[in-house]
Amino acid sequence: MTNALFKKRQSRTRFRLGTHGTRPRLSVFRSGKHIYAQVIDDTKAVTVASASTNEKESKGKGYNVEAASDVGKKIAERAKKAGVTQVMFDRGGYIYHGRIKALADAARAGGLEF
Image (cartoon, rainbow, N blue to C red; front, side, top):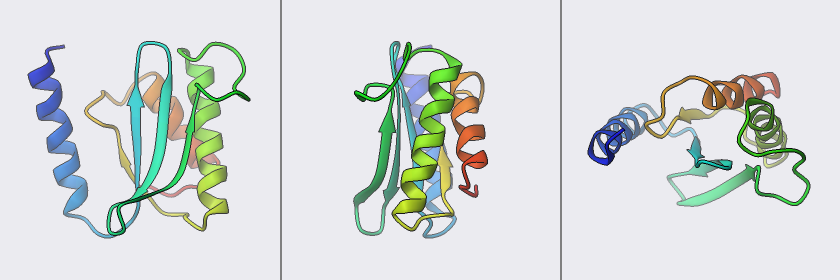
């Protein structure tokens, strides 16, 4: 994956999300060891909720599907506590597969609508 192609996919995804409304955005970042998720309100430019495998209470390894689904459950719980139930899913240029899909499915199961 070249960086230029990744940036192109990332900007294309964010452009499509930006033209569809005023829902908060569930943004995902995937590194080699961890996965991070944030619910961002772009109208106020503030992070509403966040979760990652890099937190102290995370268990196990941070780079597998089970850890990503745990992050999805945590982000759904924290977003609902902050009063957010509907979000737009920003996969950040990553392919909707593996850890990204596991996080999205767990967030849906946790009560987030997207």
